[in-house]
Image (tube, rainbow, N blue to C red; front, side, top):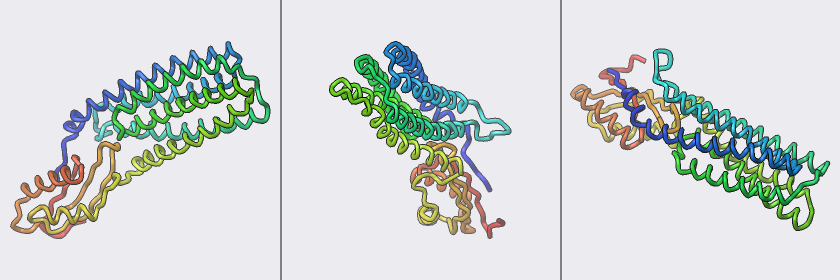
Length: 300
């Protein structure tokens, strides 16, 4: 006897969160793309290589945010015969790719910083300070939009890390501009860029690692198969044995589990099945489960 949760119910329940995340990402995308154009123009007019380089950084972030936003759009497509779980996993793929892009951005920042240390370029600190301050304001708004969204969603987290990288870049540019205005010491700009790139790498590793874990069908965070077996045997009357427990995640918000349960001869299969699924949802937070009920030895 098999049973599993209906896909449509889960989709309907999660739709508001997905649409809210999509709207927030689109607003951040517009803010980032708009300021990127302003920064590129300001850097060109001021002759600031630092601002032009940061605009290039924001260009890559704009592409990453567009990819993350598209992932939400794709994830809303209904499941079909070829993709019975739908397209939700595309969000995890987007988060994984964005994590890799963050590694590349951090590497590019370090290479660029080394080049500037070897051949310092003149910087107009006044215009740099004004534009960097505007960038900080824009990035603070963008980060606030994403941080008030669903923090469990890796796609949102990856996008937030891109924005955080821009925000830290703006802070670094402000500090560098102030130091240059006060002392004329231009190496402060590339030195701060390297320090900030290390913070970006830390976040990139976390997102890439977690997304990779989901793509490799890893178990949900904190899941303990032995604890599930023991709990079901103790909490559900008639359960003699629980085995073949496999847990994974469609996305970080959608944990799933399959398991086999052997019941006592006198146990009611329908009642036991309902109790098992309720227990999995309430005790372990797993709303989608596939349970095989057995009354004899497992044929597998």
